[in-house]
Image (cartoon, rainbow over the protein chains, first blue to last red):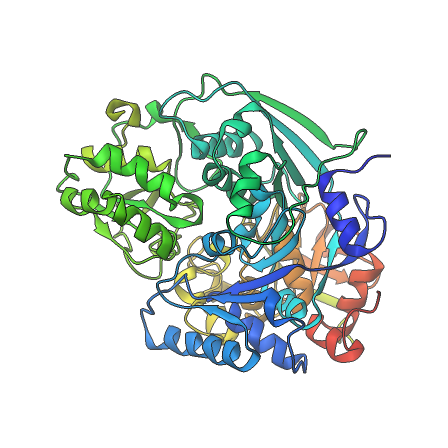
Length: 417
Length: 171
């Protein structure tokens, strides 16, 4: 019987036949943690009595969630990470370098067919590069750093095809929100998703990251795409490793095969307080907003900032709106600066944050006040997510966020395109 | 170190579906400290501000589907454990939370929780996987753990497992 992509990658890394439902111990190609999870992982690593990491070239640490540090408590946790990285000679990306999920792909840490774990739930992002990557907790990450291996329950796979062609003003984020609304917060619990179809082929790599990133919000373990010439080009420009794409076998067994024709899809918005509470933008158009945010591992890349720049050009952010923008990495920051996009932001009255997670996790850089509405390009809108349980978070594409920031109310971005 | 208590007894606090890790312990606390006792004071604060006052040591969290969805924060099961909660029972668990709970030694029980109500006294036999609702003598069967995972649970978590075996037992 044929195998799915997940079964093939897990088999090759387990050195045995891995089928859905099996538990296997696999070799890892890369493992990392960020400042929300690394301190506990370091503590667990030490408690396990481990002296050495398995491979200094296959581990990295990232300071992105609280960067720069907002408090002395956080500073001491950052210090712990710096000390650990120095002691074990592993790469630490410090304040201002960017979000882990952007740096992992930008810096060529992963390649097609890899098996990757990260102590961050959105590690599934690299599925767009034909990688099996998934989030784990701190103690799992400690075990991974020590042994280079981790156990996996081989997931069953749901195959999803997107048919048609996206309309102008409709982006990968709209697709991701639409899918989350359709499947629900546990629609793919424990499953791997294979994402395919002509719509995916049409998307650029950055947009594909957005989609693979968001599969976490339906409970999935991985959101893997096939490799094509775009993937090959992206990887070749960033890594010297030989590229070997993994395809599913003929006759692979799927739990479900779903097909969505998205030719008529309009911009989507997730309403408070859950990511699967999704409606077409017109159902919430006119809802007043006080804060807007573009950035995060979902939508803080150059393509995203270009769209925002296009909409904001020669316009002003509404006087009663605070509009924060956080480029996903220093590279994105520099590239958008060279293209003149940052100038547009600043002239429009937006606030430029340093590369990193920005106000997504609610610890710094833009905590809303009680009763306020926020529109954000992030991936979660849980109550309290941005630091205040009395605020209301709407999720949308960067285009929808930008258009809404101009008008001070939720706005269909196609008015500006 | 074997898990000390194989039979747990406590009162149920019922929650719904899709209780995410942001709700279990908010990001505004989890980044600040490695002290799980400190985090435990804010357990479930954003969706149930009185929970901490109401709960007693040994009580049980009972939920619906997909408990612990969202972020990978291990602070979520840690905060539950250090708040003195005996176990979490749910119809299903989000996958990272499931692993984290096992790794840090928080007992989790996957079973049909529909008939359990807040305030019910429950007795859980972790070895046999049986949950008894005392008031009506209802007996619920828990989803058994695969033997590989049971090995981690038996020693009290992944840190103890690594200390005992020096790494993974298989391969």
